[in-house]
Length: 439
Image (cartoon, rainbow, N blue to C red; front, side, top):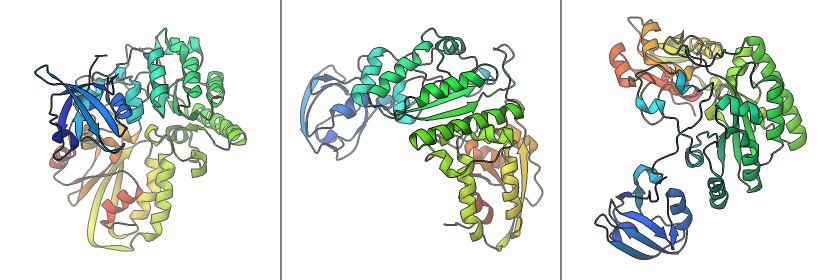
């Protein structure tokens, strides 16, 4: 990590920073005589009414600025690289790593393996803590970087070291106990691989992590993703339907124990496990406020409850005829089938759903979020009167409308010759199909 990372990228007009003559390219060296390494230090040290900032100008001059402000008043500048500088990369060689299973020649950002506790705090990225030093842990505690998101996978030191191929991986419980003693809130996940960290090993993991309540506030249990591009990698397979059912039952049993002990379920199986096992999706109270929706936990329940609320408000008919093609992954098709049937009861509305097989990553990848543009194009049968194509919102990046295989929504729309409309939830689906906003 570089000594100084706080290079100013822009200064807002009319801000305190502009009034003081701060310019892009300036570097913050110290705040109140404390070294400022990154945005974390800046936010912590600048939260005062009187601060001194030591700047280094691009020509090498140093300025010492004395500033009076409200304690929460923004100085009006942003930092290069988000004020983080070079982020830490993953040093593990996990046997289940999804990045290692991706096809070649995708955009470079998809092959980046970050493992930086600062991104865990700021963005909710999961980290393994294998490259987090004791001084990093002390900093997390001192700066109160909470919550954090930690990939645990197993609490067995020997098994975790074997699965992650990192000799430092076995320290995870000591690290978590230290963070818990500092009052840091921790969300955890376990990516399960059949015959490796499931069964009794999963019981051990759940028992160890639930024992750290109330610092460990959630554990998401998710199945390993297996693509068609792992021929030279560690031999793994996906879960069978029966095995998925066993995982669901185990998680539900542990939820019962946690509710009895803590009044909170704490352990959650991902939606994918329930769909694989053909088990009913639990009620909302079993999701404890939905702490891990980004990990595919509880999204279907939220969708179903939202749909239940808006379904009575759907119109009996729409004024103009609309013929729509709708695509999803194989796994979610059973959930969406009755919803599509209900939409087709609306006069002048026709929705035809296609469950896309994932040829890009491999047929064992069935989740909607990994459906690609190329598979949508090849498998969606448009009629001459099709007005638009509806896609799951999860298939495109959150920061720009681009699919995993590269094309944008506009590219797809151009190829189809009709609009392509993403829908993230039940209300958006109702809107893009009927053209009506339902509140």
